[in-house]
Amino acid sequence: MKTWQALGGWIGAHLALLAPVCVAIGVLTPGIFGPVNTYAVPFLFACMTFQGSLSNTFRQVLDVFRHPLLMLLVIASAQVVLPLIAYGLGLVFFAGSPEIVTGILLEYCVPVGVITFMWVGMYGGNTPLALGTILVSTLLAPFTIPLTLQVLMGAVIHVDAVGMMLSMIGMVGLPAVLGMLVNQLSHGWGSRVLSPAIAPAIKLFVIVIIISNSTGMSDYVLHPTPQLLAVAAFVLVFSSLGYLWGLGLAHVLRRNHPDAVTLSFACGIRNISAGAVIAGQYFPGTPVIFPCMVGTLLQQILAGANGTLLKRLGRRGDGLE
Image 1 (tube, helix red, strand yellow):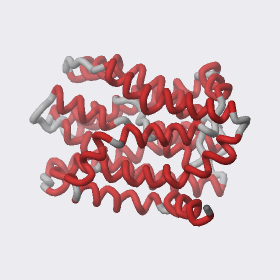
Image 2: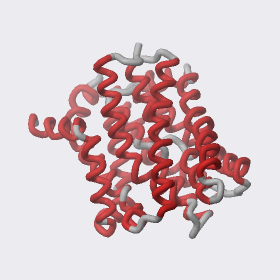
Image 3: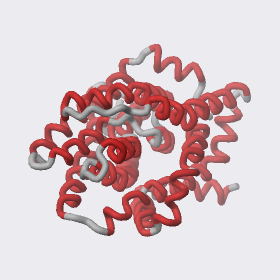
């Protein structure tokens, strides 16, 4: 058991370094890990949500909704403020390519990513706040995404609201309820014993998810173009600013370290796979999909680097209450 726990601890401590390696493996082996992304990732996400929820109680989640101001501020930042800034900068840097601007806007107006819950749990964040933010953000997405694209770009699309909701129920809703139920009925055994026992397996699932999510970028990375390189540079810089925005918001609001962790990841991580699906369905054969695919490539690397930063800030107490 000690070796098993040590393995999980090693993966968590070195995830910022492991993420680029995993991305490279996914890019170079799409035929091997591509099917995993289709068939296994939803199950792996559900397992991660279950493990993360073992440390929560129903009362904690209800408290988030009883005092929703912080959650609403995070959602407003993630789905209103940051997309507007990205849109404005996209017009400045890619004025001659409205398709690229549309792709940039689409990447940042999608809901907070489900994988936020995993990163928040690994770095000691406020998991009830993360769970509530993901759920509400996802519920709003079928309305906010079409409205944003129509108002700013004049593009009229229809989002599969039912499919998105069912996906969130399977990957987030039911596993979260089950995890909290196990913890509550077992009088804390789920949090004290079960969660640490399965945590190393969850870390291994993270590796598999990062690799499989990177397979869709294979063609673009192996055959780069000047335009793609410019988009990649923009996404790298702006996505990094998303994490810093959340951290800055936590500092301004004088939140504690767990809240700062959650705000940083929630403002930085997007459900980019949803953006890629929308781009492929409604803008086929256009560069609209480029920013979403580049975001997929960089997101886990940036999340790992952000986790390392948060760990250092947590030790020093910088910007925290």
